[in-house]
Length: 140
Image (cartoon, rainbow, N blue to C red; front, side):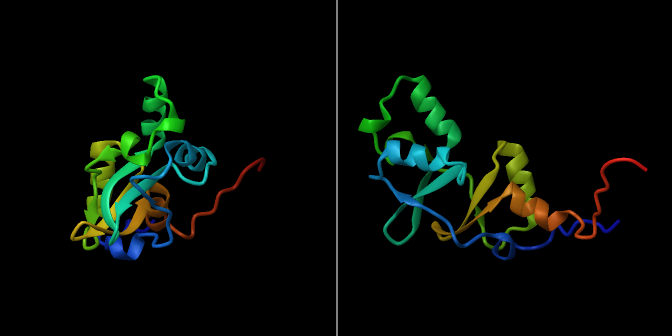
């Protein structure tokens, strides 16, 4: 079995096709986007792709548990400020460490505070698990 490559850089692992919202985006519409199952978290950016926060499933749950009306709120009202990020030169090992330490499943990749991409735990697992793995189910 091959040793996982933990030295691959974030820039080579990140997804660059992503969805982001502005601070003023409707929290209700954002919750629908997240609830659709396509996204478990959405970055919040300002002009120039400057990352200012992230809204996750937990942020939406927290707002609802606090009795907040998502119809009246904006992304900035429910987002987590100062999300954990990595620079594009971070290694897969660094990213795994950050995800485990902060118990997060996605991490924005930035350069000078500007959003470049996102890396999910699935992206990492796809990279780290041996491509030649064969699963056999059933009888003999």
